[in-house]
Image (tube, rainbow, N blue to C red):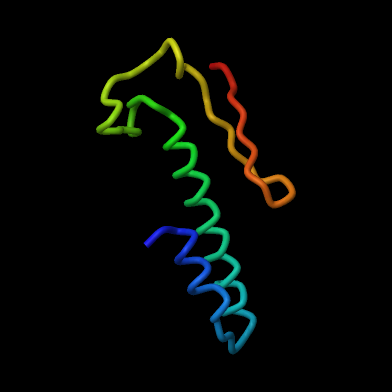
Length: 85
């Protein structure tokens, strides 16, 4: 199941008994968001480097990917930029 589908299925149906469960629900939502951003940045990087390995791109590519991928949410949208090392 895709992360987006799992979040849509589980999050709106939560039934909370106390503030502790509310905190846990918010933490779970943010964990889903973080997982989404990590997966998105991993799919952008078309190479293998360090602990990031892709079967479809098994080699390191310093010419195109000697940089960091910066991913963040702004106004509910994913913004991606690259930062040279």
